[in-house]
Length: 289
Image (cartoon, rainbow, N blue to C red; front, side):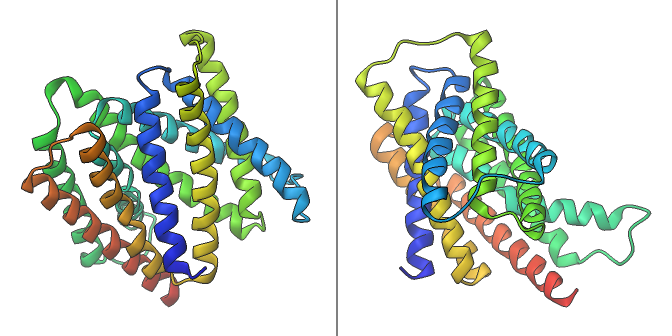
């Protein structure tokens, strides 16, 4: 399967996963959803890895622990945002991670100890991304939803940090499936800890299907995305990855009747453009370095 089609399928998986999480959040606490999402992913990879000649043993347990902590915090906050925000809004805030990574780079350059100069285009991309957030949040979030909006924003920050940690693990020689496996274990641990405070909710057929679908879609989406980035071009993949927002808009409208104003659409377009610009500028900077 070519990389563009892999990316589109992965984005559809993640958008549908977001739909399942939003539906499941009416029945389960965030900690429970995080736990079962990790359980399905860990079991799937534990079964598939040996069949493909891989091993789950690692020399980088501490690095996996740091990545899992950051990633699970991001995931939990995003699941919380999905419970209280329109589907497309929550997905858009999570896709801010590319803009946040650019912001990290700008702030790193601005540190007194850093050398070099600020790329004005990168600063512009970051500012455009934040302007897009204002446009997305202003017409769609009520005062009661501000906490969910803040959770979505912070989840994007942590997701950007987690992505940088994944890159470091990749440079250290860790295969993607092993990174996903330990992340899934981290999700199980965090979810189990959270359930000690929130308790357990009774299962029914609908709830179990939603929990299993969340884990399966997350694992399948990660596998498809990994394969696409392995064989495709980074900028092309990043461009198509934002189709997840389009899928979320459609699903949110069809399933929940979520309102979508021209202002919100303009904000989404601005965030997508800023994310693509930031990805292009960072890739050019890496190539030049």
